Image 1 (cartoon, rainbow, N blue to C red):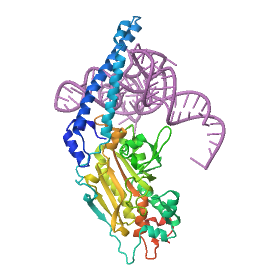
Image 2: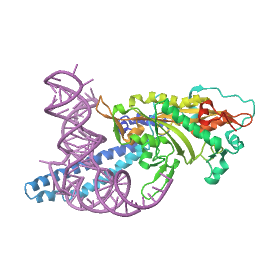
Image 3: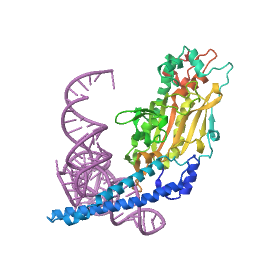
Image 4: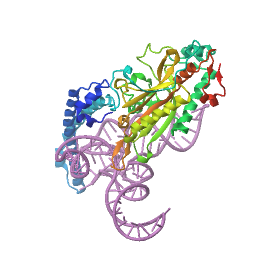
Length: 425
RNA sequence: GGAGAAAUGGCCGAGUGGUCGAAGGCACUCCCCUGCUAAGGGAGCAUAUGAGCUAAAACUCGUAUCGAGAGUUCGAAUCUCUCUUUCUCCGCCA
């Protein structure tokens, strides 16, 4: 959520900034709402003040044993007038909140302008794609030929399209990857491991910006009292740890890592990546989250991105780092780096991690603040998150990059201690 | 699932209709005393938001907030209803 005072100030400049992200702000609408808000707020608060002062006098008179009747008559019609004023004021406030909570975050100045992913900027490329002296297979065929250790038919029988079953050594490889990632981040990168709920309430989903705008991306569990949402990323659970709190400066930075399944309805992506494990309704991810002070957030983004990259480096998977352009940067993000891993069967790099600095956007939505010791004020915290990494896609990358002519898979060195074997056959 | 109790500021905790945004304590900040890793004294110390003033802040005034929402009342932390969460006992259970 943006600071409404930015809009009350130079609204033209903000509108221009929002346009780089494809958001069109109706300036007249906002100004009209604001003018009405001001009028209604003043009116409501004046009536409240009047009621309060009269009520106070009643109390004083009664304590002196005097008859307050003359004063009470003054207040007889105040109640209804006040109730009506309060009602219109809260309605209007809600309209403003709705408008505000649908507006995306402002981008950092270092983000290049662009409409879509074709205009993202490559920051660096690490590793060289292997050249194969045999006809390569994609991960679907590889998994199928390895005794159906990756089984899409079985999954579709159980659940439908966009699910997969892993078996035996490949299931273990999946677990080994998770374990390896968690160990790296906790032992070498300073993150604290967390186990978190996979179902969250609407307030939590609002806090990180998934609601209200992206409700259709969720799987929703409807209940009598309160609807719950299956998390689409552990970012939601982890970041909201600090919601509604005022932290002390020395509590920051907070660095957390969690391994969770992620559930995505993939509404609106029919036909895209229908084959394989790339785009599915359920996948595992190891997620990094940092809660930091404002002045640290962009350096923290570089650090966090490096942490995710280190996993790829250890696995010796070729990848590149992309700085997303304005049009491709997510709703809540001020700046995002995507890590893209080399996928041999597609002869291209595919997203395997997304690392974002959300500046104070989520902090404001969550009311997560830190007491600034030099000013005494409460500043909104800055939040960051990044996949470190998406486990399913990492598995795809390993199957394809480490495939052998006979269809077996060499286990990357970094995972051998977890696997107790060198090859998957 | 059944029965009962509770929810107050960063923390603990008082407060059952009226000058209560809330006693007291702890923590924290500043000052004094003292002087050495202790103790004493004084002051300050919730959040959000609006208006005024300002270059900005400070400041002044107002409003809202005592788990959430609704109600009773001139007036609600306090009374009523609904919900949520926590704790205790019983049942069930991975």
